[in-house]
Length: 116
Length: 145
View 1 (tube, each protein chain N blue to C red):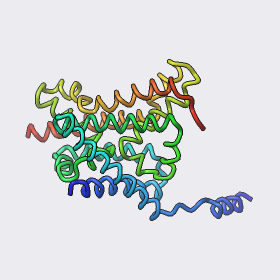
View 2: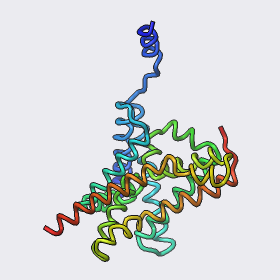
View 3: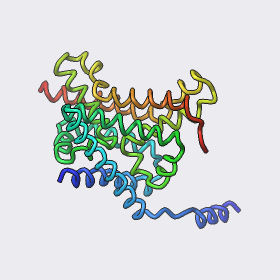
């Protein structure tokens, strides 16, 4: 059942993004930024946590979960360390994704030739 | 003269079929979501780790494969076909980073790869961090009231 929910939610987010991309003159960069901010906003009152419980991996794969993790880390940092935690906790949960993208991209760009 | 040129441009501008594109994005994005859920279940079952750690493993796996497919050259065609179905999932973030790194590698390690790798995906990190800072400040103020 959670597989169906994952399919529906991830597909729904992507379809909305595609409609915005076709109907307006925004670039894909704008769309990803909009969805990151939306995910960060939905975490303020723990709405996104409910969506993750319902859709599982379908809610964790889209870029909205990136924004969700950023806000989640910042709030968790504030709760444990106070105001300084807002700065030290922000990238806590997303660090793995950013580091992985940078490390893989660096070494693979050394190995592979660009293809046109 | 200028007006007629504009009319010709309008006439020959490729018409994007909104409905077809949305359905393709829906299906491809949904498949990525199912793959993510399968990977989470698989990792937490075979490696005996918690769902949170399995989520990190799943994201790293997806990033690894989209970097690999981008450098092998065929991921660009998939992105052109699925559009938002592959841009909105984390694969789009990895694809943007990888293609910038590949494009600028000719210009050297530091000036090429180092300075340009996050050219496209930097926007996501910057706006994500700034907005999450503002939202957690709001949450903090609401919590104090």
